[in-house]
Image (cartoon, rainbow over all chains, first blue to last red; front, side, top):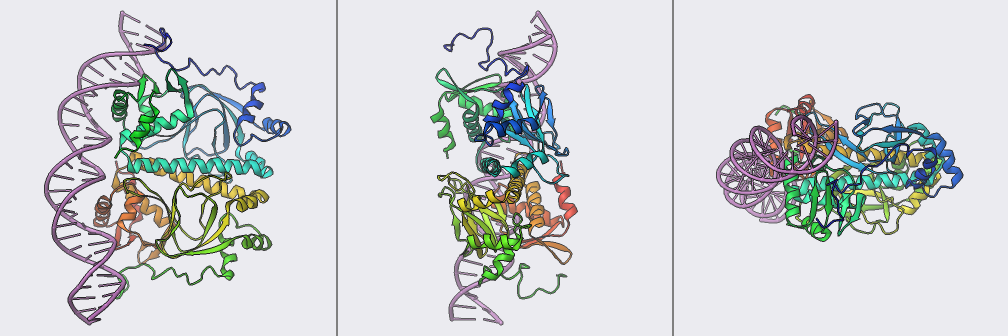
Length: 253
Length: 253
DNA sequence: CGCTACGTTGATCGCACTCAAGTATAGTGG
DNA sequence: CCACTATACTTGAGTGCGATCAACGTAGCG
């Protein structure tokens, strides 16, 4: 109502991520330089590495690779957003992670007959920089400081995954939802009015798959949080209006 | 009843792990050589690295480090078994991993003000080889192939943790118990009679903490599996007598 | 102005948590 | 060798959270 006159569009999300060719050769260097484990490399090094990557575009919902596929490639997300997930035979999916530009995914195993342990799917339109895992490993071999950074990022993801295990083991749905919203706000949050908008399409279904519950239970939890005045939400979006209050939910007994 | 006359001791577990000093200088080289990411190094390299580690003993149940403590050390388990866990304010613990000889734990962050993300506790009597994380990082810097192996192991642990997230999200208690028993059998299993004994003390409580349930629910699940003839179990031990059958439980609808 | 996908809400059911006894095992000291 | 005790384990009864099933709003798109 107050929020700067949005009339045509009811969603506060940015119209599109755009990917006509964000993956343009000119952008690639800049993107690679922004990747956490390449930052710190000089321009010559970056250019050399850049030549080894090739680009690949994906439409929203398009699968980048499937769990159990032979794992050959290593990916860096150059534009858009992507999902990592696991499936279950009952059809219930688990959403492990949402990736943004600069995040890596895919394989970096040395074994030639490994398979991907998760499915990667384009969430918005996506452009990836792709490289054979063996070539990437040789890059790491020659640049120990990069290898150590990759190791550190992977260790951080392990810690995050273990924290999720703890959440699932010990906390009820409402707290888990509050937890994931705070985490998403940290990663995708954008100040918007007096709140922080999670700047990525986000259905109740996806939220549910992120915290191991059902669409309906996620919806009920979200409704409660909204009624409590902690968030605002609509179709495919959530905005956090009271971060303190949300954090207090986590500590509830 | 049939099982080769066990009369004095009712537990089939090996009496003790023993650690008078298994950490003896003579053993250290052998232990380090057996660590997955050091295997492949020559004797001179190993000896040089060996000199950088110091040994440390722990009694059963003794805490090696606490979650939230300042993270300074990197550990390799030289003798005994250890637990990694996370706590919750409600007192409910989550058991993330059980470690055996050769497993690493602790910190390898570059940041000086990181904290441990989990608690490490001696499960049996334990001896560790310990090194400052910065020193360990310098070892990795000089030996890319070791760094890549550590990265690979960490990636494997990430995949395992994500699989646990899936288990918690999608499967009921009985299936999760079956799953963890199979995993433990792979890591700690020893042929025993016509079954495979999980060779480590293992209470219902710990089992429960591994799959995010309560002691009572774990006990009920175990009872069911035993009645179904898939396992044998007693105070602090479990033996798998029908692996096929257990795996079939995982696929139940 | 439909149609479709997303979201909400209600009613019911069941799995697993909680609370509560009661049993069995292993180690301890007589 | 046998009580005795501490701890592990089991089982039952009751309850509640969240899953399921179902119906109905609602936003956005063609």
